[in-house]
View (cartoon, rainbow, N blue to C red):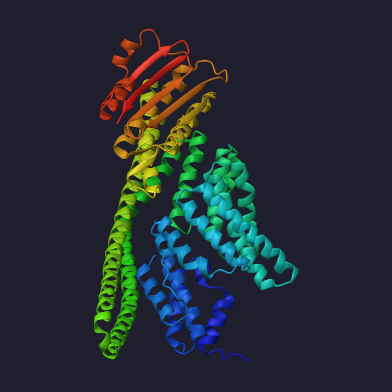
Length: 579
């Protein structure tokens, strides 16, 4: 049966056949077309209504118009197309990746059948996205590999059955998953492992995407460039940083500028390196104020909408409960009239019924109060995470400025002072990074923090040939931020001093041992030791003039303790007790 070319159905057919403008980044145009068609489609035509609403939903999200996107989802829900109004992608766009993942698991997982390989691949790919964006790269990689296994099975199946449309759909998702695996390897600094996945992703998306997913292609190209920069293959790195590369988002533009600054820095063209660094700073300064305020408003709106929807659902449930209660009361009155002769017997039973109803009412009140308190805690946790995230970003900015100042300074003493300052700033930034990544914002798990801190220090001194074995024994110890920051700065000084002075000859036998223990009474013990050459004979005079040692003593005072030091032929040992 032919389609009348002037009908809205024909327009939708042509629109989808030619490819949505949103695939090319023209989201305003795509939204305008969908809205115009929506006004002309018959209200009873649920199929076309749902397709157009899906297009409007997608493009409102691309334009960060979240209140409008929520209204569209309400319409989809009212049409009976969807059982839930989901918020996970909106939370993700607002940077609340753990919240987004929780909502996604709750709303989506139960609807995926075991033999739905495409759905399974899409599900684990989304979990990987939330975790990768939350800097949980290792866990994200595990989920991406699960997604890859499901899509591989599906591709083999649809290829055997010659189902071209399903093959194209699965092939495109396969390209997206390969790109995500590659980006995970980049985050894990496994650059040689990342390159094959990223190159395959670009080729696969080009084969199946028909000119779509340009943003994915750009991200993959920038990731390959970063790999080659770290591998010092600068010629190949610049191949993926050409002017032809489409940076159709602010994030991609900032990433490209960062990589160009990194390229010129590595090739000792410091003028251009500083130029692209300043360009990024200007872009960030121009958007951070408005974006921050807009993000707050959008977050408040989204949370308000979710609360309203929750209240609506609770109101419906309350009406049902009230109806049941009225029916129950009616039955109870009837029973009392029928069994009036057994009054004394039923009196005790009536007391039990009353107590039961009172218990239900109290439980309902407790549940409502618990819900309000939990929502309040979620909002506070979100704000605290945002604060720690911003403090970390500001400290990283200070570190970048110190790095830039180091390149423009010729005095060796000044350079060393700046590098030490940068190391201390990184130690504090890492504290705030760990805090906003934790579910519990009040404490820091010291084992993971110390390992990350040591990796940061090692990355500096391994360039000079140091290869020292480090053992950390702090399993299960958690500290609040007021104690974690002094600990981090003390460890930063001690590890840096060991790398700089304790092992003048790198014989591969250098060892560092770090212990933090807490007893059941919460009394703690800290010990740091190395098997280096120990302290010099004039160490007491040196401790009075050394900024690092004076800093460690002041930090120990903050912990209400005293830093003790033992030096012998087998190295040096620092220790103290703390509460």
